[in-house]
Length: 463
Image (cartoon, rainbow, N blue to C red; front, side, top):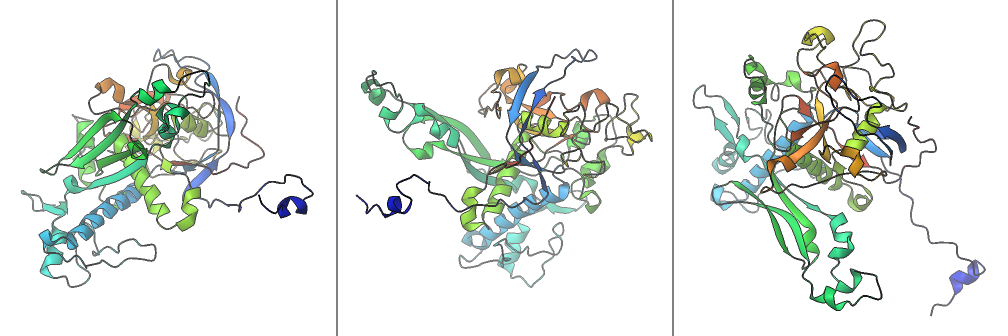
């Protein structure tokens, strides 16, 4: 037994043991969306499209959200990081004539300093020997017809791991069989003898350099069973501009939209749901690498849930659109968003395709382009039932479809409408979907991060 000094110092009363307070820094480019509640769905069904929208009262916790969609420039930073990582590995790989002791210079945060002045042309900023040049050149290809030198998109693969804390915490997956059922009348013998099966995602590169993805089912053996591994080719599909619009002349967007600096601040498109998740994982690892001990306090970047997205889009008053008015134009006849007016004049709002991120006014939560511009991926699997099958507190409906699953199980909820959609589809409650491996010229994304603690005294009131 202890000496009891602590108890004596407080007269025998329990006073608690407090930890060191943590002030969560404001994430760069994000705004807080405070906890609150709202009624999800449309009060009146959409007679034009014949769609029934489930309605339900929902409460959500506070979170941080990107104030704009992820831009080409930000996503290109991800691509460049993967490119530089490949080069670094090859500089140390004897198969490329490298030296295992070789190290590229790093900045103060430990990120590699790119050995190029121009990432498209790979111009060395210092004299490189033949081995170094070989490693650098290995990530580029030359177009066989016009001789254009470009990044080899097929090599831009990002490997990451995600530990499933939720699955690991479920009683049925406890490593100790006696903890799987708290009923003291039950015999634990059946739990000791019963084989518990778990399912996890894994991936690897085969001998031909192709990504092999697999969902494996095996007996529970240890905590590593809840670590999922993913390898994703992360280069956006720039051909989406011609594949989405077969009878349109969009060659210029296919060639320029992602790579040309003129489009740096436009939302990235041609990114699948899987690639958006890979970006969130990279952004998390990129942040945590420099945080040290504070890292354990920070939540991961992720895609918003379908409910978080609608809650954030409606703003503090819970309006049908991200703005207060029920109209799509101001009293000065200016549009509030980038979309296709029902008459089909794409340019009436000032843009033919996407517009720069943040070109229109923010909603009351400080979020831009929550209607139109590009529709946005959410983390939620799409079902017709929607919120009716979810909890009414921090709801989420997640299903990590296995490669072998029927394609219909790979639908993910997409919100917000886009530059090509009419007014009917840019309302905050509008629900639609896309398959998780489909890149589109009108779908982008933004990230969220759960708050460590939302101390707001005045939660949003939704009607």
